[in-house]
Length: 54
Image (cartoon, rainbow, N blue to C red; front, side, top):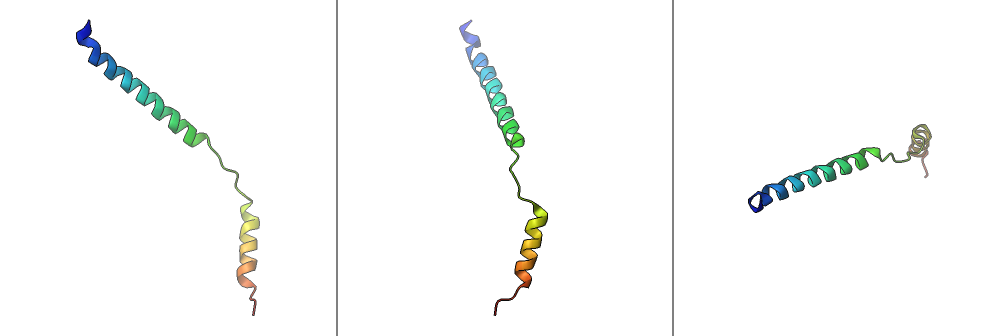
């Protein structure tokens, strides 16, 4: 029936929007950046801050 077309478009829009949001959330939480060794960085920063260059 043509009178039901707006409801069909609305349901399609909601389904595609939710799919898009779920896909974006999954991509955001799946990304794990490579972090350098934190202990080496802390020691290096500590040594650099304590060495005075006159």
